[in-house]
Image (cartoon, rainbow over all chains, first blue to last red; front, top):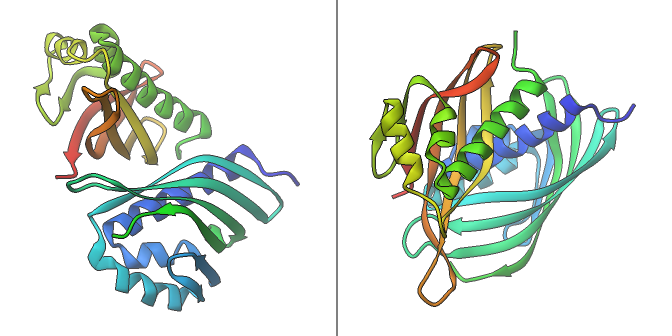
Length: 133
Length: 127
C-alpha cells in the first residue's frame, strides 16, 4: 500500500520533532524518535546502535543546546506499507554570534511504522562541508 | 477532532503568506493573517489593532526575506499552536547575503469563519 498523505505529514512531523529536540537539548524526545533498535550513523558521531545508546550519546551533546539549529530542507519521501525512506538536506546554523553556517549535509533516513507511529530505524548523516566548531 | 492534513496545509500556507506580505511590505495582507484582536509580538515592536498590524507589515519590503523551517503544529479542529524556526536574511553593502536575525515563532491560531488566523504570534529571538 503506498504511503498516504497522512503518512507523509507524520514523517515530516517526526523530522521536525527531532530538530527541535536536539536543538533544545531534549534528550528523551530525541532518542524516542528512534525505534528501540534504531541506528544513528553520522560522519560526526560514528555509528551508535539502540535507543538507549542514542540516549546516552544525546546526553553528551545536550550541553551544546541552544547554540545552533538544525534546518532541514528538500525532503524526498518514498515507501509503502510500514516502511519508508526520507532524504533531505541539513543546514546547521550557529544561532549565537557570529551566526555562522557550521555544516551542510544530507540525511538519508530509514523509517518504520511502530505502534506509537513512524520512527527512525536508521539515520545516516553524510557531511558535505563543515567548519571546526 | 484532531487537525486534518488540510488544516496543517492551510496553517503552513498562512505562515508563507505572512512571510510574503512582511517581505513585500504588504501591510493589509500582513494584517489579514491575524484574527481581529490578534496580538503580534515581534522582536522590535508589538501590534494589536488593525492599524498597528498594517503598520508593522508595511515596514518591510525590499531586501529582507523571512525563512521558516521545522514547523510543529498541534491542535484540534478550531484551535492550534505552532512552533517554527525563523531566520531573516538581508543583503549587505557588498551584495552578500547576511543572516540578520534568527529565532522561533510561538503561535496560537484559530479557525474563524472557516479560515485559520493567528490569534497570537510571538518571536523568541535566539539571542
